[in-house]
Amino acid sequence: MDEPKTAPPRNPSRTLVIALVAVLIVVAIAGIVLASLRGRSAGTQPASLSSPTQQGEPAPTAASPPVPAEVGSTPNQLGFAKGSDMLTPIVLKKISDVALAAKKENHSVVVTAQLEAGSGREQRMEMAKKRADAVRKALQAAGVSVNVIKVQISELPPGLVPPLDADRIELGMK
Image (tube, rainbow, N blue to C red):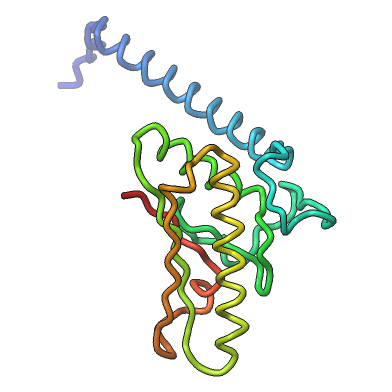
């Protein structure tokens, strides 16, 4: 009744697949490690991508925590600190990526800001204009022609712009 079971014969193709999966896992881990190391050195951006509004202000380092508007943002959303138009290294990287894609694919770039109507509208409109202008200048510094950059600032009724979205600029390509 209890007959000893023999081991299944080795299948060379199954062994090959297991080895390939192991190699892919090692490559993926190495990629993650390299990406995290690159992210730490992102504080050294070329001067051509720095915003004129940053002159005289210390540049944030990659080790500094991201601004709240940047947390949970998509690759085409640029987060700003509340009341600031300063471009962080994360934002500069996103702008650089969009500029590269726009030039490569010959697209125009749309810079969109949203603000909420109501009291303090003038200050919010001025901040949205400063942020959009800083993004436009960074796109130009990255090689995007001014002719293909469009800026749109939308004013929405009260309650339609979440607080985090009020501190974000969105980039799109057409």
